[in-house]
Image (tube, rainbow, N blue to C red; front, side, top):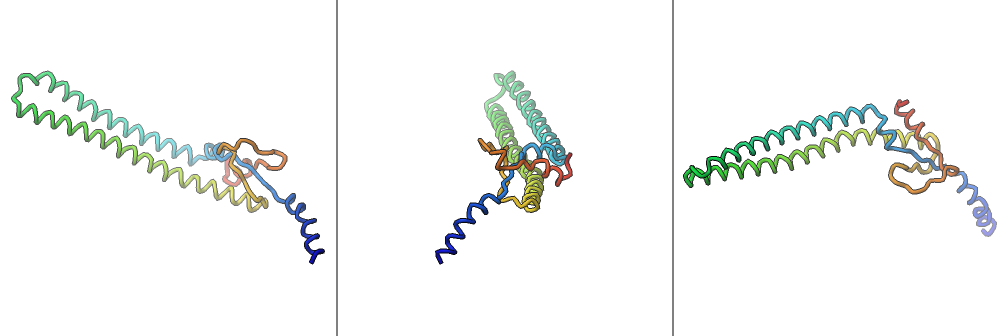
Length: 165
């Protein structure tokens, strides 16, 4: 029993040395993916559309508020109250539209980028399995130090797996 334990202790350092570690710059790879460029363009277009819609609503509100301010002194009280209520309702509608747009934009980003991130993770896993890596770390996640002598940069391999040059 002691001999078996002694042999295990002797070979443990060797098995630790045989483990392979890799690192990858996932951000660099993702930005090089054509799908990412397309998704970013689509998201920016959607954001611009939302901004234009809100700007149009705000301009309309401002125009009606200016008109109300000019004729306010000559209007009867019941019409003043109705116009104030309309302006307040328009303002509330703008606020709600802004919140809805932000949520829709976040959902669109999550959906579009989620597919791309999934594809990237699958490529990293495939490179890890094919290369026999124990762990592949993402350096774009802010890891302060990675030893380049103990860890291999597999960014190029993952790019090749994704067909990116």
